[in-house]
Image (cartoon, rainbow, N blue to C red; front, top):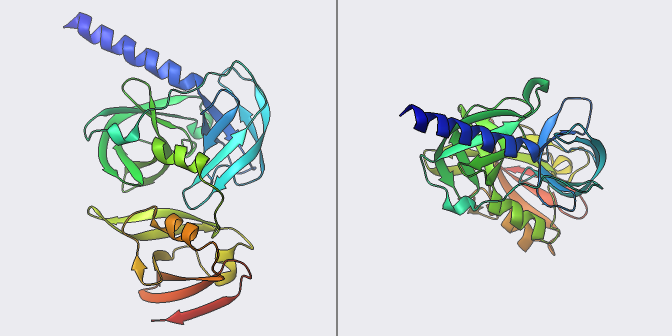
Length: 279
């Protein structure tokens, strides 16, 4: 029994070391440090949109090297961003299949909380939703943008937030779609799914970018987006799909809850006009 425990301990330590080598520190402003994952060998790094809020950032690798990074992809609605650095011999993460995750499966998270470098926590998968992986694992400020990995060291998600004590990660397959998807209209908001049991009630607005379409339409932090054109959001990625379908429209009727009242906000995707109606 002692031999088996020692073997398991050694395996977990090896996995943690591998993950730490492909996890980076990201600093995009003076507010603090987040995390990121070396996704591709050409210097592509994935992190959260709320970590890479500026077009440029500083990226520190696990070996201490620091690089200037340029933001190449940005989607605050999915809370995803991609950064590019000019570097070679990078320790690229192994990307896993988030759809293959099972509830109860062992997972590890790596990040840079409280200025620590490559801190590791472990837990299990609590639940899976189409747009999110939820794990019973401890995260802190600084873990945002870091990897959630399975017991074989494959990255299956990007940690983004804590909801009711559970870590929420963006599935790895959603990250791949984000990198391949054509540009689409952006509202300029960072969102968090609001779940009631297994049902998606809507998307809580965590931040609104200045001068964005959402800001011009009067969307506020704390609003809950619940639907578009009478079609309610049943999945966390529904908003992105509606935006993609609405590229040629001048305005988007966005339904939201604010202070116990349902409103319809007409977001002018091109002109930015503001109209709000109570319903």
